[in-house]
Image (cartoon, rainbow, N blue to C red):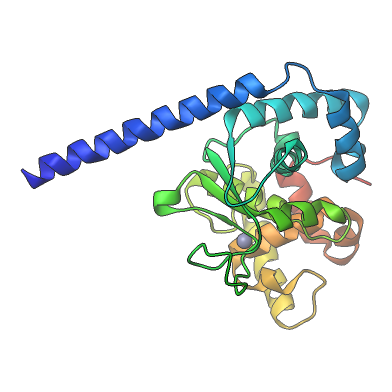
Length: 262
Ligand SMILES: [Zn+2]
């Protein structure tokens, strides 16, 4: 009896969730412009170095994929306000790591929650003790990403400091495509690169922990963080990564199919 009631409640919850997301997506799609506004292009040129570095044809492609991303993913502010520019930065950070993979969206993402500032493990952002700038949800929060508004703006304030929390979180989502957030993104890593990448992670983490690396200390946490932190470095300071960590650079260039040589 109890099992039956529980099953009905779960079913109702799932139906409610589906209706909620379909309605939100429809509302969002109706608000989206049919063609990319010139003011949005100007904004991306000014704020997103990756976009600025694309040739005209690639920019058009990027813009179309921004519209697609924004129509697929619900972006919800929580106790804060967001505008089109914030949404554009979120979409840009989502697209940068998948642009050369030919993807536009993430099958494992439905919604991005935007908190006003860094938060703690209980998702509280008012106590000023929170230090988490972004996270990928798991369990009941599967399909949800949380980003602090400060990390979105900060990530693109300086495009060359190897620090971009939104890109970091989207790389965790790519890592999760094979079912595990373990630093080995099997779906984008060609088979011959798996062992070299595992070796590069092992050596890279060792160097970080010994204080002998230019990759941020947080990469020493585990292999998943090594991938995400190194990806921030790769997309923001490829030249320096190539010079200081040539094997990490070579393998990242291959996994993200990146022609980046800037
Ligand atoms: Zn992380």
